[in-house]
Image (cartoon, rainbow, N blue to C red; front, side, top):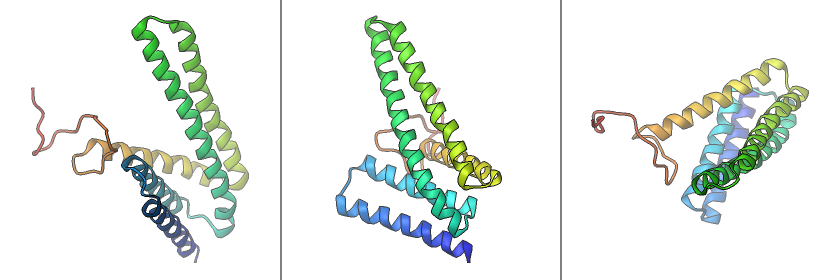
Length: 170
């Protein structure tokens, strides 16, 4: 019964994301993000096997943490862009480096606080499974970016792994 509820929750989230994409006619980049988020929710749902009570307590916390992570990461990327520009023009790189390092520390702080919050609503074992599921998802996404047949992030210019169709050229 628990698995059925978990699967139904995941399907509802995926369906809602798909419907929102069609209604709002989002750009490719935003569609890619929404699809990735739906896949992440499905993987976490499967890996954690949450009870209905756990799911009700966990998902609001998880969604809030994800919003905090996105914001902290955006600040970090903005700081990195500013640092890169500063290096290119020879402008106050020491200050820009400090700003970048502070932003990077903030990302780590968000993750550390997240674990503590998750432990309030889940067992240590399920928090550990969550960490592993998030890492598994991250590796899956990286794999998709690097494989010719995988769905790639729009505008991604990363190298592809060699294959019969795409051999390494030296």
